[in-house]
Length: 262
Image 1 (cartoon, rainbow, N blue to C red):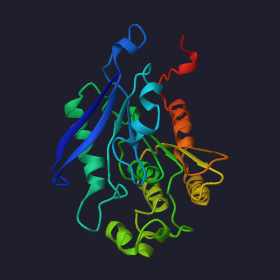
Image 2: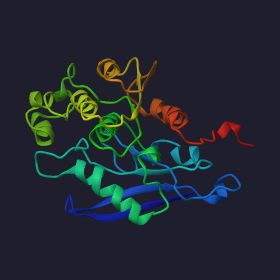
Image 3: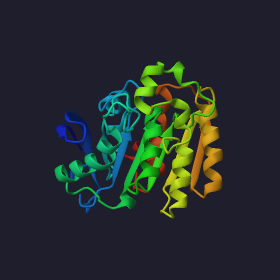
Image 4: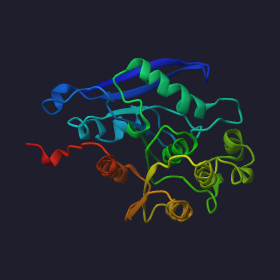
């Protein structure tokens, strides 16, 4: 296994950006394994995080070291994986530009939708579903404690009016556009696109639990293959660090859990 920190110039954003990438190593894999066509998981951070957060807060590198899976960890700052009203197009930078950069740097990684996955927590859960609904790049998308529905949420508890308007514009208008994930999901269905498989998890004591129940209720009638799980838990890393293991089990990869190793 190798971990790369890459600084690259984003033409879309007009600035230098950083991304962390974990790559499998043949030394860590079963005999006869190759590194060609390696599946890829894009792993997204929440509010206040960056490209280093998953590495610092979880054992993601240890968990996958005997599994043929690359993990790409970008940063969207506090922009909600969106093309913001203040002119920085973070969605385009992450949905279009970054995958092309990753392929240039690591041509052994899988290009097919079937082997590209996305997951995130909180704001990153929103980003993961958004990328899955508004592109055709990801076959699996997972959200942990995702901020994925806004119908019953007061956003001004998480930021100022100026902040939210800078990202999304007038907030009530958000509920009528494809920044609203329920609308984005229905749009994907209406276009007849192949639907991603979805995994949602949220703790019962998490302030976003009602939002996750609401999103699950909106998605089920649309025909998505949805796994929704919950347990006791609040909005904190103790739970996400454990739950990422469940996400890895859920993905269509040959995941080698550590307890099965000698």
